[in-house]
Image 1 (tube, one colour):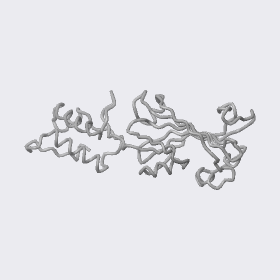
Image 2 (cartoon, helix red, strand yellow):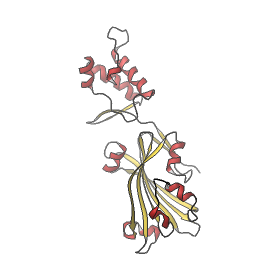
Image 3 (cartoon, one colour):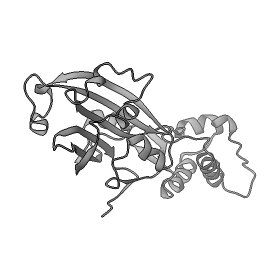
Image 4 (cartoon, helix red, strand yellow):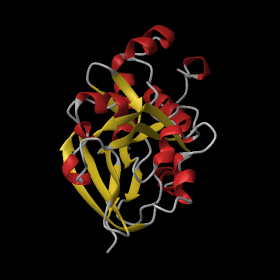
Length: 245
């Protein structure tokens, strides 16, 4: 970025304004990406001989316009785009929700394994000791931004094919779309305002102890049995949430 910055010290436009305009244009045009770290005051001093007040004035304008944010002890970063979720509007797959919000979705799989009844909230599934479940943990991204931490559980008694499903060839959502046991009669979703733990803050690249939302969802089949239990977390910075009634 610094090699493209051209400051004119003889211009009637103050240096802090030149720097502010350059960075703002780089952010709005996408040259600087969401979450990208900006050069430090020392970087500017070495490259251009700029004083700290000049740099701080430029950065203050960017902060005031919510184009960047600061993390104590880490520096200044390009601010993520604001994300809006209609959380209760539907039970559509997360990737589809992300695409509807104007982002290109992708996933990072953290865990994919079979667990028994002792490793899950048995009161939700009312399961026997020998019951087995598919457990998956993922991060869902929109463009380059982590939007969701998500984990879900499916009983293998209803979806035995999940144990051997090759997700490199068939996505779980594609598989479930045509499965006879995947008909949702109704779902119960509970949303909590929470303080995110350190690992979640690390995933979202935000300060430890930041606020967020936890979403518990239980989906019931036509026979009243639970066909999926999921837990999702979203970070609370630059996020708005709507509820449809």
